[in-house]
Length: 250
Image 1 (cartoon, one colour):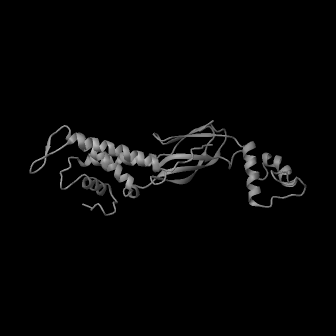
Image 2 (image 1 turned 30 degrees about the horizontal axis):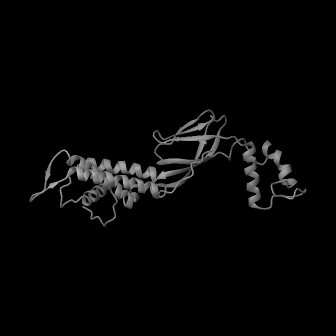
Image 3 (image 1 turned 45 degrees about the vertical axis):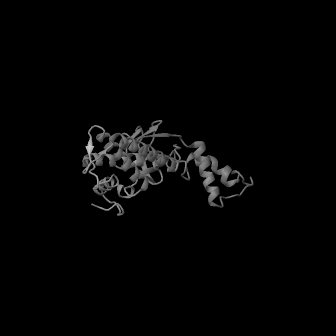
């Protein structure tokens, strides 16, 4: 059994850590391995859901959207949430040099220099990166099609509205689950697991009278209440310490 001061790298070591924190081997902890594994799994779901700074991380993925298809299954990619979906590239050719929408603004913006903040005189060219980005962003805002995406985590499916009428490519900005080997050693995750196990242990002890060797009894209702209080505090601490994320989608 791994000592509590050692780094935890497996579910079995996490199980042993929980038992140690509940008093084992000085006290016989009446919880089955299956119960402890379920507790670890349940706590990992809470941690991934609420901890947007330690339980998951920001990542990117390209999604090729087909005309007439509005739902895409993204299972197996450990996605917790989708923050944004940028369709700006590939939509209606707005970022290609010879597209109609590009041509409409090119003379006014590039040749005459009538971009925001520009001098409005002829012969002006795009001289710096910020002006180029401003130009493309304005084209996108005026001519780009607007879509909304909805992430359904329970079935790991992305829905796009309205249904695209052409093939497009978008950049997903997502949050993915951190590896279990990382969150095992997170202080808040440990608190969650121990508190939840303590609550279940107290619930079991409340049904049976457990006597200690040499006399004395274990008070099940007290342990159950302590576990309940500690679990509520751990969840609240997890929510309070989690960094907020931008849920804008478009």
